[in-house]
Amino acid sequence: MNSGTLSHLLWTAMSGIWLRRKAKSTSLPSIRLQQRVRRRGVIPYSAAPIAEVSMLEYGDGGTLRVRRWHSSPGVDLQFRASAWDWVRGASELSPTHQLQFCRVLADGATAATATQGIDGNLGLGVPGWRTPWSLAGKKDRATFFDVLNYGPGSVPKPMCATLRLLPPNEYELSRANPRVQSFLYYGIGAPCGFLGIFEKIVIPEYTPRLYIFPDVERQHTFRWWTMQLLSITLLEPMVNCPNYASTDPLKWFPKRITLGDMSETGSPLGIRTLFDSGATCSVLPRAVRQAIWTEWFSNDAQSYPWNEPFLRHNRDFSTHDVLFEFQDSAGRVETLRCSAQEFLSSPWVPLDGSPGTLACFAEPAHDDDEGPYILGANFFWTSIVRLDATHRGDRPVPGQAAPYMQFAPQRILSDGYKLAGPWELEIHADLPPNMQAVLRDQPELQA
Image 1 (cartoon, rainbow, N blue to C red):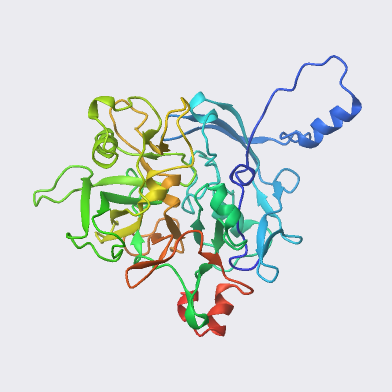
Image 2: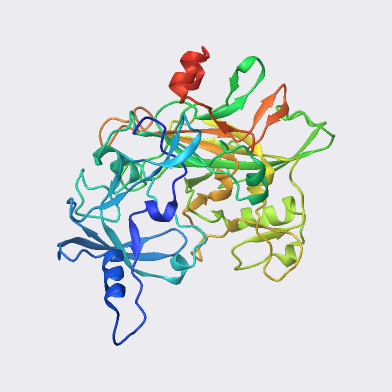
């Protein structure tokens, strides 16, 4: 498996977690039905021993009961992944490489988990993370990075991944170039961009490296991809065709929402935030969600939808921007600027038939309004996220050899004006990033 060929993965199929369903009662099942059930059975008939049973708890209050088997060729789950063929310019099932998953069965789920709109069980946790397993060793594949490292085949620098999710817009997708894809890319380099003048590929601009935070209880252990979110700001244009590289107060009206308590100097301390592409909604403190409802969506505070998983509005944010102010574990503060439309809207409409769209924001599941706080799928619709876990050892020193993240908006600007949006950012034609970098004399494509 070459670097960066793995793309367009299916969340449920790739998770290695399978739900057991009861078959319909029948007194005389046919031989063919019995054979079909055997082929689809998730529990091996070899009576392989179960390694351990555990409870997997999610930040939204959901819980799974999961069982893990010992890893062995006769028990592991084999999966042929859909990979990008650079020559044909299409997604194909790899004929030679299979991904090898440790067999895990979820045989019980709470309603909060069973009714989720998106299955987030792919397992892009930081390498070395073993929760919920207490007996799993280094070679027990608990995260997707483990699958790449210990499975058959090889991926150069598999500890680096770039995740790009397109907004779920079937109309735009039907009009887009076939190379416009959601993907999970392994290895260094920028797999997508926009072909500009003089045959130069223009790629989205990434933030500097931002080092993630260690676990709260174990200061040298990394579990989740986390940042401190200090503020979010809606930029409302006051002129036609504004400069999207500027925050000129004569052209943009900022509506800033700070998060967390304030320091003695008056700056926000922020909230610890997880990045979860499998979360249907971003989970933010109740006060922040209420501020979005009133200040950004221009709704009356009295009509705030208590205990509802979405917010609704009737506004068009296609000309607006949103600023995310992050602080990493080393104290570095960076601002990511993206289009607001994808973050604040969705293709879904209210079930009661009322006009408008649903925005994917939820409150914490706990009554005390505590986290975990999450930037979910709607954040990934705005941004391309790079995860680099090439740290040394299972417990690297925070701020030095720690895993880091980089963010890039799903758009390209030229002199402050929009050159390309998410539906114009294409996987490179014909060749992967390393070859494109040499051919076009653009080393930034492989940086």
